[in-house]
Length: 439
Image (spheres, rainbow, N blue to C red):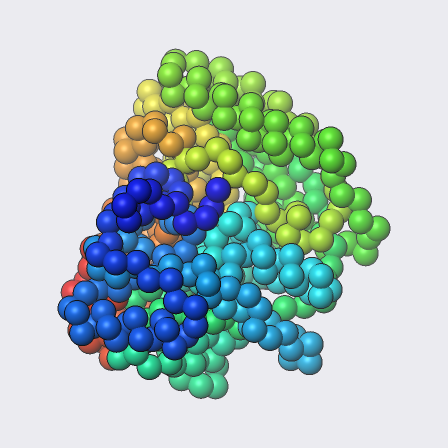
């Protein structure tokens, strides 16, 4: 799972199964020079170019009928600088491999999302994030970037070199060039104490500000059709490490969160009427647990149940209203929602098209099991999110366009001007970028 899901005869399919495309040709470059040559060749042949990662986006952000660049040979760590506390990795490196390699070196990223199947460049280019009081998205932890631009040249950027490119390219949507290497800030490996416990939704919303400010990383899952949530608090710990035992870990993470959950999804898809009953049972099945481990083992978990997802960042102060409206909508709608709603937070950052650009944000993610009709639910949810000037995750389902983004992103014009400069002929254009960035 999570590897580039390729079908027969050059058909490419994403992880969620909702995007399928047949590129004119596929290239798997083994070096930056080979990638640059492929970009120049595509331009000569009049073909568009897109790089794909592990296909974890639910939008068609990586789709092309031109040249599809596959990242599997551009992987591995180029350099670890213990002095500067940075690591430079090839763009196709899966986050999982990066996390494990760093841990062996006694290092870690400060924060990360809850899935680690994606490539580093796919995750950062779409603004992938976890939850954090002070620590922000993966892209906000980038110190330098290397990318091949439309003319086939290699451009490096950081706060010092090409700062205007750095400000935009960390969340570049694949529109400014093809990322070939990323330098992340790292820190000495540390321990996180995790506490997971059920809590009534009313209490979580009433105490949201307190829960958010008292914990370094706070998130919760609300189960629609119920007033129940499961909360998770992660805070740094002096130790000792107390990992989840293998049996308990298998039971919670594989049996309940993947096995039984998958069976419940199949049942709910076949018989929507039972969904509220399933929700009540599953929201009470998880009991409180505490454990202490290294960051990637606490932040991330396997996701074997395939789903489709929409996620919006709303201003943090709008979170409680947004969720109350979402709950009221589900309660009166007749919709049957079998997947919990995930809520996380992030501090403001300084990246042009980051969903947390210049504003403290809260994220609300709605999911549906793959193969279940999701449009009615997502459309109703999106109406609520956009009323609060929400910004959708670039890699998840949404219907917004450039006109909308120009209103909710103060630096939208800065990004499109840079794109005009770096890719005037739109070599990296596709239907998705045409919609979200305009012509």
